[in-house]
Image (cartoon, rainbow, N blue to C red; front, side, top):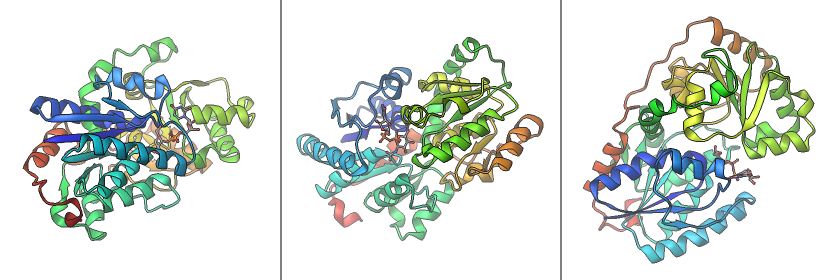
Length: 365
Ligand code: UD1
C-alpha cells in the first residue's frame, strides 16, 4: 500500500503528524509532499520540528498568490508527483487550498482520495475554506468525519454512506500527544505573564484583516480586562503596518510573531480565554478548557459552541466585552465530543488497510 499525503499550510502539519507516525508504525509506504503554501520558518519548518514530522519527500515551493494562481500552480506540480509516484491513495487533511488542489489533481488521474476532517460546514460560501471543504468531500472516496454532526452533513449532501467513517478529531490527537511537552514552553514566563491572567488572540481571516474590521478588532483587544498576547500571522502584521493601525494597539496588547506549535498550545493552555478566527484553535481551546470567543458569524466547528466552550461573537463589541468578562468571572462548560481522543489515526489507518483500492476512483463517487 502506497499513500501519498499532501500538506501545505500550518494546520495541515499538525493534523498530518499523528497520521505519519501511525503509517510508519504499520510499515506503510508513505510519501509526504509539501506544496509550499506556507514557507516562513515560523509558519512551516518549526511545525515539522515541534511535531517530529518527517521532512517532506518533495517540496513544491509554490508559495503565495491569488487563490487561482496558488491552487493552479499546486495542481500542475501535484499532477507530476502523482504520475511519478502512482500511489494507491492520496490523503488530504483539512480545508486549505493545498487540500483542494491535491484532491482535484488526484481524482482526475483516477487515484482515490481520502479526506481527513470531512463534513465540517459553516454554510458560509464566502469563506474560501468552505468552498474547499464542500468540493473536496464531493470528490473523495473516503470521508473521515471528526464529529457526528459532520457525518450528518455528509449524509444530507447525499454522500455514499459506505464512504463516510466517523473516526474523531485528528487535531485533538496531536494536541493530546504534545501538551505535556508544550507545558515547558518559556513564552508565558518570558513575557512576564501568570497562569489565567492573560488572553491570547489570533486573527488572520481575509475579512478580519480589512482595514475597518481590523481596526475594530484591535480596539476590542485594547479594551480587554487582562493583557492580550497576540501572535500575529504575517498577513495580519502586514495589514496593521500598511493600514497604519499601530497606534490603535494599547500597551497591554503584546503583538509577537506567529508561534510554533508547542509554544502556541503551551501559551493557550494557561490563558484565561482566547479570541480567534481560526478553526482549529476553537477545538484546542475546548479540550484545554479555555473559554473561546470566535470573531466570526459562523463556525464549522459547531460542537465547540454546543459544548459550551465557544461563543460566536462576530465583530460585536458588546458580545466580546461580555465574553471577556465571563471568561474571567464565570464557569464555562467544556463537554468533550465523542472520539476527540488519541486513537483517531489508528481508526483511520484500520479503515484504509481494509479498503479495496482495485475499484477505480470514479466508480466509488
Ligand atoms: C491558510 C488557509 C487557512 C488557514 C491558514 C493558517 C486557505 C484558503 N487558507 O490561510 O484556512 O487557517 O492558512 O495559517 O488555504 N504568508 C507569509 N508567510 C507564509 C505564509 C503566508 O507571509 O509562510 C502570507 C502570504 O504572502 C499571503 C498571506 O500570508 O499574503 C496568506 O497566505 P495563504 O497561504 O494564501 O493563506 P492563509 O491566510 O495563511
